[in-house]
Image (cartoon, rainbow, N blue to C red):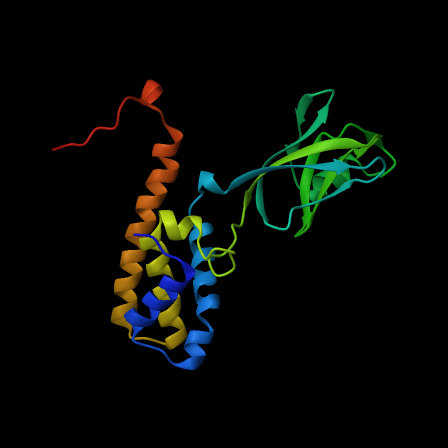
Length: 213
């Protein structure tokens, strides 16, 4: 089965046997916290994205997308050729390129703050940049049709993650929390296997999957 926002909220209330107004009013927060826990626990290829942006001549900063979580790569494109920048840290760029007036094609980049990259050296021309990154998907509680990838493809994981957050909110019994944590971890392990195992292999290189009987 799969979840919509409406059916997931109803299931949480049924499992917890709680329809108290404050609890119901916080279900969107509870579900979003569960989604965040899942997204930051397993690297799903479904949550990769490519965007292009512009580096301006004389400006060593580049804004990150609003749904950005962390990078896979940053490249500049010159005459249709990709030149991938090396991911370093801010202190390296400050030391390697101490003068902002030192310009050229950028070779390095770093996370400057939550919303910005810094590159070095400072671009000497307007350049197109392509960022490949892991993004934060829209919550099922905010999507226009009330669905999400997790709700459709990992419904068990989303349910038990939401129940864990719900019981934390309710200050529920420890034995119930332990059971939900166990179910959550089992579902997370299956999704991790699919993401880090099956999605990174093919039959040509690795052979067909085999089940021992």
